[in-house]
Length: 132
Ligand code: THU
Image: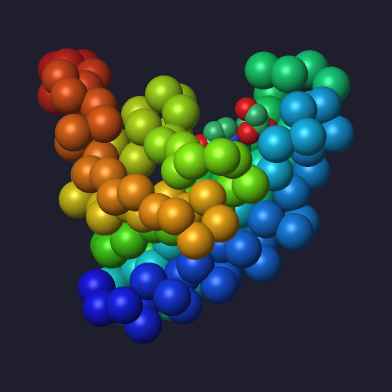
């Protein structure tokens, strides 16, 4: 990933954030994933009156990538309006572990960013091997 790759992903995440449906929390999130083939898939959070049915931005972007047939995923950018960069929630960590364990993650709060790695966010993850 060079800086222009990150900038392109950030742009897509910020744009997707504008589409967030967050009438309950007011916390809008955008996400964008870059696949190994160079395609970008964006998502936003989509809330529900039944709060547990809410979809996070990271998972909508992940589902968009997988739905397009992309399984090799390189990087994820998260964009929020929080005071400081926010990491993915626990459910998203589990989903990213399943489909993109090697993903590089950068989270932006305005121009401030933080980097994360999936494996470090969810150590000792439950995975397909535990179903044997
Ligand atoms: N949310 C995300 O979309 N991604 C995150 O990383 C954290 C939380 C959403 C879920 C909910 O719509 C709102 O932010 C507040 O939790």
